[in-house]
Image (cartoon, rainbow, N blue to C red; front, side, top):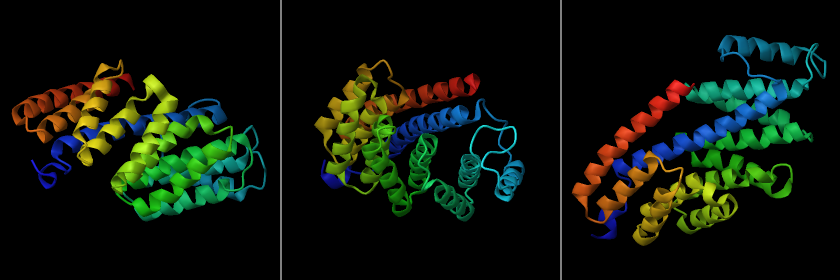
Length: 273
């Protein structure tokens, strides 16, 4: 097979990429939820656009640094609410509204020197970058990635998030076809994550598959398959590798197995909520 025949994003690799993005999205959202729970004391009620808009208006109108009966600075409550609204609008594909709320969120957090404020800014910057990546807007994603990466490099309170931020950077580099740069970012993240770097290995496999480095892809997928955290994304990646190396029948059989396993995983996730 020639490079032009094999280096493309097939339906299989789209599925594996989707599975990996789902995993990364869950991790990022869990991080956001953990942060919000930490500053709020307990999980809040289900999201409501109207209630959130009303709460934002109330927070903007008051002059108190801390609202009566609360212990969290008003600016952080306001940033949280604006970010939640931005994320809601983004999921609903109201992109102009989402962008306006993202901008307002970071305007509030930009000069916040508190640990909580810096954590929110870094966490929301990475999550916002991922939202833009899912939209396919690489230009808007990059500045948010840069903010998160710089904070992880320079702020000791944020350094534990570096592997996640590097993974997001690598996704941007992969979509930009910067294969060497993406590989470097992921290898750095893996050096930190070690055996727990399943998502990073998945992204690295995608880099190798999309740049036609079949031997490297095979090695990386094998590492994923041996992991205690192996899931449907491993099967999708292996199916693509099989197809790219001329094993069409085996690829189709494994893809069917991967789809069934992914359905089981989604059902399990739904039942656990």
